[in-house]
Image 1 (cartoon, rainbow, N blue to C red):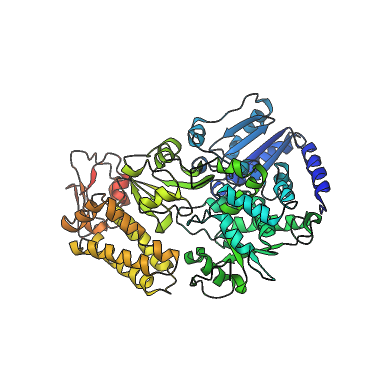
Image 2: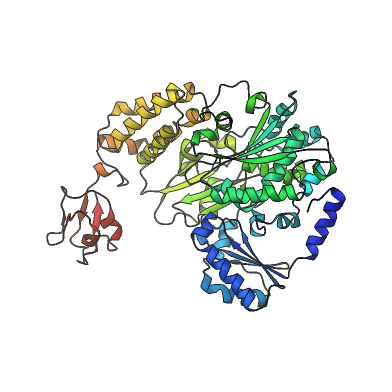
Length: 597
C-alpha cells in the first residue's frame, strides 16, 4: 500500500494502533541472539501460541539485538504498561513463558539487567525491543516516519539549522559537527547530489552499527531521507560490509517496504521530493571506513583515500557533492526532528551532545551494547554498567578500535567525550571498549593491533605502509625477548612520523596502541627487554610452564590435553624441549599446580 500524503499517513497510524494485541512477546534475534539459539526459542513460542489458540491475544516478534549480549537469548513480554525481561532463555522454557505472560500482573527485570541498564540512557537502542525489523508497521506504530512527515513541511535550510543547533557530531570517530557538514553540501551548486551511510564497521569487537541496522533499519532510512531532503540530494547509498548478512537482508526488506508505503521513491507524501536508496556491499577492507576510500570503492576503484580538499561535500561520489555520515549519526536525526534541538543538546557535555553507543567486551562481567550520555566516565561504564572485572584486577581498556589507545586505571575517571579522550592519547572512534585484566600483556596487545592495521593499510602512503611493518617487526622482537632499549625510542619516533606523514585517518591514528602503551605501561616493555620476562605470562618465548609438586593431586588432566607428550607426571616435570607453550595444561588445572614463570 502506498501512503500518498500526510492525512493518509495519520489515518494509517490510527489504524495500526487499533490492531494492537494485548500481549507482545519479543525474542532478541540479532546475530548474537541467533548464535545462542534465539530462532529455536522463537519457533517454540510460536508453536505454543498456536497449540493454545492464542493467536488473537498474543503477538510474537523476532526483534533485533536488545543489547544484553551476555544473557542471550533474551525475551521481553509487553502487556500494556507491564514489562517482563527474561534472560538466558531456551526453547524448553516456551510453555512457562506463555503461562507467565498470561497471568503476570507485575513488571519484572532481573538484577543483572538492572545493573546493566543502571547508568544507561537508551534512545537509539530502546526500540530494538519492540520492533520487528522486517515489519514497517512496527516502526510506524512507535512513531516511525512521523519526523519525516514533519520535516517535509519545513525548508531544507531550517532542518540544517536545527541539526547545527542540536550539537550532533559524527559518530564514526572524528566527531565532526554534522550540521556544518550538511550545510557545506547543501550550499554546493550542482545538478546532482548524493548522501551515503557509512556502515563499514570494521573494528574488532565493535558491533554497534550492526545492531542498529539489524534491529531498526527504518530508523537509519528515515534519518537519511530527512538528510537528503535538507541537503537537496535525490539518491542515497548504504555502504555496508558483506560480513553483515543479517543487516543486509533486513535493510533490503526495509528499503522495499519503504518504497511500497511511499516513503521512498517519487513525490514522497505528495511533497514533490524524490529520493531513492540502494545498498552497496563492501568487501571488508578496514580502510574503506575512511570516507574518500569508501567513495573510491563505490566507484569501482581500489579503496584508497584521496587528498582533501576538495572534501566529499564539494566533490565526492562521481565528482558530485556528497554527504557521508555513519549509521549512528543518521539514527539520531529522526529524534532531533521529533523532540527538537534543545532536547538533544540538553543531553551530554558542552561540546559532545546526545548519547553514544559502545560495545563493551573483554574481561567484564556484563558484556553487550551500552548507550550512555556523553560525559559518563569510563569507570561508570566498566564498573557500574559492566559489573567490574570478571576475575582478577583491571589493567587497561582499549578505546576507539585498533587505532585507538590503551587507557590505564588512573584515567578511568575521564569523561567519555571527544576532547577528554583525545587528551589521553586515544580516540573516541566508533565506540569499541575492550576491557583487559592483569593477565593481558599490553605489548602483545600493541603487536596484535599493529599487525591488524599493517594488513588493512591500503599501502598508498609510504609512511603507513612501511612504518607499520617496521613497528610490527620491533614489537615482534620485543615479545620474543630480542628487544633492545633503543627500540623504545625508535617506536616513539616511528609512531610520530607515521601520524604526521600519513594521508588518511587510518595512518594518522594507527600508532596510538603503541604510543599509549609506551606512555602508560613502559615498565612492561622494559621487563620484556631487560628481564626477558612477560609479566602477564602471555608471550610464549618468555614464559616457562612447570608443575608445583605440593599442589598437584595427580588427576592427569594436564597430560590428557597435552598434544606433544611434554608432561612427566612421575617426576612432576614439563619437558621444555617438547612443550609448545599452548597453555592447555594451565587452563585445565583447577588446583593451580601448573604455574607460569
